[in-house]
Image (cartoon, rainbow, N blue to C red; front, side, top):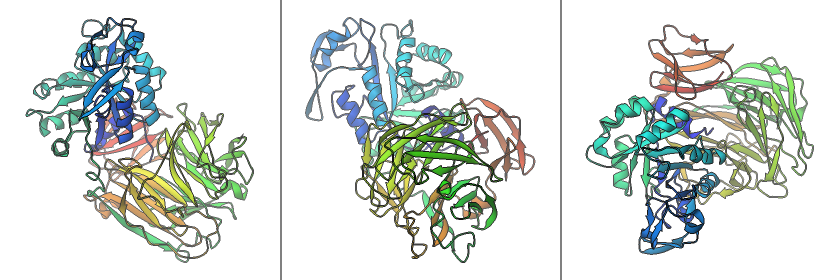
Amino acid sequence: MKKITFAFLMILLCCSQNFNAAVLIGHRGSYWGVENTEEAFRKGAQFGYNGLETDIKVTSDTKFVCCHDDDLSRFGHSSANVASSTLAQLKALQLSQTRGGQTYTATICTLEEYLDICKEYDVFPVIELKWATGINSNDCSNLPALVEVVRSKGMFEKAIFLTSMKPCLEFIRTNYPTATIQLLCYANSMESNLQWCINNRADIDVCVGPEFTANLVKRYHDNGLLVNVWTINTVALFQEYRTKGCDMFTTDYLDLSGILEPDDEVRFVSLWTKTLEQAPYLTNTTSQRSMAVYNGELYIPDMTTAKIAVVDGKTGDLKRTIQTNLDATSLSCIRFTHDGVMLLGSTNNAQDVLTIYRCDENGVTNLVGSKTITGFGQADYFDVYGNLDGSDGGFIVAASNQGKAVKIPFGNGMLNEPFLFDGHKSSNAAGTHAIVQSDTTFFVTGFRVARKLLSLDGKWSKSFSSPSPSALAVDGVCFALNGHEYYGSMETRFGVLKLFDITHGLDSPVVFDNATEALGSAANTAITSPVCVESTPDYVTIYVLATNNGIAAYRLQKKSVGLTSVDNTLPSFYIKNGAVVLLNAVGEMVSVYDIMGRMLISESVSTSPFAINRLPKNQSYIIKVGDTAFKTVL
């Protein structure tokens, strides 16, 4: 699964009409600690909340602190007024608050400290602007400094700026047009605020109430806006407002363990299975150790022949072969970047040197880069995120058999300097894989390697609680569907796949379905079983290759989608010669949006295929066809 910036996620959710994904926001951090302090924030993130909400006030020396009230009387200091106190004076006070029968103590938290916690736990910040010096309906002079703090922490694209003060939101929208903003209001003003939100491209955060209706939520959705609701502290209330269509739920202590998982709105089906005899492009050796999918086609390199088999993802039949001029170890791993560049490479059995090539459809290869990474070790596999040729770039991540991990940023067709850090920490584990989960996290897996989720800055890691992947698991894959996040574990070298729903994090994983059957039992000394996925808004296709045994395709799909309609009649697209080509879309309206949600093209599809060739290259787009949305990069 490729996790994008929060602002882009908002756009994608709107375009795909997927408004039932449960996004939970910890109110003032959480109920477990003094509100708006470090303990409450950390415990909210550790509990699994997707975002952390805080309130911002301004001190006398123009520092931003997390505090809801004008003074600290609720925390034992009635004479401590925030606006007339310096940060140092406030930091010297011990705050006390009893919640749920337990008394907590803490010190006041700054905006910077709060953002550091959000970044550490990979949650998005929800920054509520309270009436304060330079942040109010009459004076916005301190807002630029606040936004600069958020930018300096690298959290601007993930942050939501929330307030009931419309002039503050208008100031942000005017001066920071890419910011994500939400208007805070009560249910009785939800309807009257709709046009203002449309005009200012502002989502809305609404208190529960009788005027809060599903029809009003739909009207916000119809205008590309999301709806947050507060405060949701019971499962019954959550289910009520989820049924209304709300996108985000602000809570003090809501626990949804076992409520959303496993997702009963999707099903797992087998599409096709082929043995070695039925798939002549497969070998009876261990020379096919990797696989990737792009635009419905599987690419399977053979280390012995230096050929790449291109297979029809719908049928499992061979379509063509690509002959390359690379040596065997350079074909150990294959991946596609978001902008469609085929990458091949490994450490070539050499210690500390990772070499990456690009390959076109004719088999022409060019060196992207060869990086010496002292102390890294050997890595047969890597994973990618982002655009190789674009200026926005991306990265390669790899995990070595010697327990290290490396992130190598790339952009404009080149590799940049590597960053080395600890991976699984084992001294010798063959066939170790790095699997990108998002732009900030990745999994490490491999034969007898504990499955771990790591941050790409090397600062933290998490392990699976029970149930967990097998100790014999050899590969894995990440993806999302219908508001749930999944980890697909290749439980053995023989193509056994098991799906874990990890929507609530690795502390409470749920097995979505029993493991699939093995694709054979022939010897597989490669110690891997390649797996890859291709996602749409309605289904995810999972391809499994058991080296020296067979190949199969499975699908996790919404129950409302039939196999026939998935394969033959739903709108789809591919990229050819710099144009977006639509299939199965005659009579539908197609709309093209840029990354900020601005509509660029809107017209009726008259033919199939239907080409859109008026878009600038090297940019990201959202293509909406009817109620189906796709993300692509030209």
